[in-house]
Amino acid sequence: MQEAKLVAVIEPILAEHGLELDSLDVTRMGKRSVLRITVDGDGPKGRGPLLDDIASASSAVSAALDASPAVGDNPYTLEVSSRGVSKPLVEPKHYRRNAGRLVKLWLADGETTGRIASATDAEVILDVDGAEQATPYEDIKKAVIQVEMNRPVDEEEEEEN
Image 1 (spheres, one colour):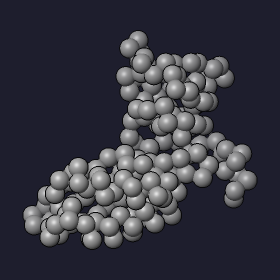
Image 2 (cartoon, rainbow, N blue to C red):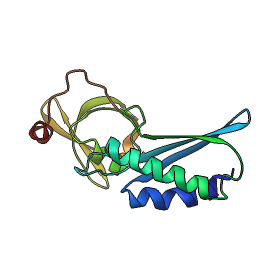
Image 3 (cartoon, rainbow, N blue to C red):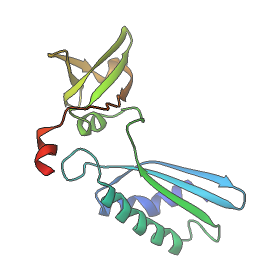
Image 4 (cartoon, helix red, strand yellow):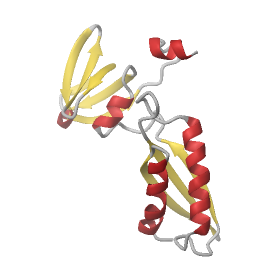
């Protein structure tokens, strides 16, 4: 299976569902291949895709791949998932979609942890112990969301429930 042909089939379908292709990994496992598709997107609140959106897109991608010559006669297993919190933040949109979450940044001169207050195309603004700290993306070596067991509830999230 050629990844470029797979991408050509997958990306338009994801776009129809308001999703973006984050990564595609094709792994041979015996006579089968495993196609792992990771998706991202703004979702209805600008904070990432919903599970229902991913499930709907997954069904459509599966049907399109079954009908496409991109996979040929090769049997495959399709896995579609979101980026998840363990993937490093690498683009401004990743920071924006995680506004309100706790993030750890590895910088050239050390580390810092704070809550994402906002993000522009040039920098991320963190709330670090009540003070805003602007960090240009070019100064960030690595950024990872920190999993919080007792994460403060966002007012918008609380209104939905």
